[in-house]
Structures are given as C-alpha cells and as structure tokens.
Length: 262
Image (cartoon, rainbow, N blue to C red):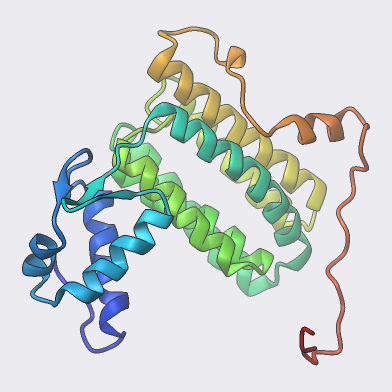
C-alpha cells in the first residue's frame, strides 16, 4: 500500500485513494480487522487522515468500525451485489439516456477508445476478473461523465470496487463474454447516434442480464437466470408496459446565475 502522485493532491485525498485501492485489490483482506494505527504505519502518515478515509469508506459500505478495535473490511455478498446492480440499473439507464442527448464528437471518440479497451480485456482475459472489470468500469463511468454527472461516476467507482472485492463477474459465465461485448457496442452505437431511448433500453438490458447471470452462477447452482428477482426494477417494467410515461424531461435551461437558498 503506497501513496501515489505525492504533492499533487492533499494528504487526505492521497490516503483515501490508497486505502480504497488496497481494499479493492485485496491487499486489505475482506473480513479482516485493521486498526487505524496499523494502516497509518503502512502509509507512514498520522492517524487523522487514515481515520477520515475509513469514515468515508464506511459511508460507502466498504468498511465498518468496531468499537475500540478498528475497522473491519466488509465482504461483498451476493445480496449486496444484487442491490448494487439494482441501483446501477436505475441510475445508469437514465445516464445512458442523457449521454445520448449530450454527447459531442470528442465525447464519442473518448468512449470509442474505452469501448476498445473493454473489448480487448474481455477477449484476452475472459476469466481475469480484475483485468476486465477495470476497463469495463471505465466505459460505464465515461457514459456517466458524458451524461453530465461526475457524481454518478463516483457512485459507479464504489459499485465496481465492491464487485472487485468479491471478485465476482458475469464475464466468466459461459457465453456471457461475447454478450457483454455485444451489449457494450449496442450502448455505444445508440449514444453515438443520439438515440436516447435505445441507449437507455440497451443499458438496462445489459445490466439486467449481467445481474441475473451473476446471481445464477453464484447462488442458484445453474438455475435459470431469468428466475432471479431484481429489486427496484418495477418502475422500468411499468414504463415498458406503458403504465408510466416513457419520456424523460429535457435538461433544465438556466441563465447560468446561481440562486441563493432561503
């Protein structure tokens, strides 16, 4: 565990990023308990920035403080991942929709490069969880950035970190590798063409299929993936059935002036 890019960011940010990376990589072992002192000594820093980093990571569901003991690195269970995917479906469906509305030529070129990186990783390392999850995450996070929400990209950072902690991926499910690559291309094409509805539908279908394949692989012993129930998806099914309006509002247009809250 090391502090990278020293001098470019403040110490608290360095420590947070180093600890989060150590958790995601497995250097800090899931299920294990670490004192603030231990981590501070590893990083050669004081206790204060380490404690601040761990408190932030506790808010993100990656660690849990135990009174007078330290912080336990939480293991990511399949139910946890099911919930994470459910939230991703809700958030990234809208993100893809908005990205298709917002994307400029430069955005498309950046996304095209990330798409190729993800393609290459899945084809070269179909069973290498970390090697294909990282470029996969880069593709999804860039869509969030194009949509206009860097906060969404930060949320996805946390979601992918927890997936890497558990080393769980649907990419090593038979037939899923090619499906994932094809899904990414459909999402990219829809965004590049400015087809917001198709981008949203493709993203939702991609995440739903990945979630169901993953849960089926891990806990259902080969049971049919379409039998997996996904929380929070009801609103999307209602939209499909025409129960709620299919459209999303256009971005709010403002004069650029900020108004003070009263």
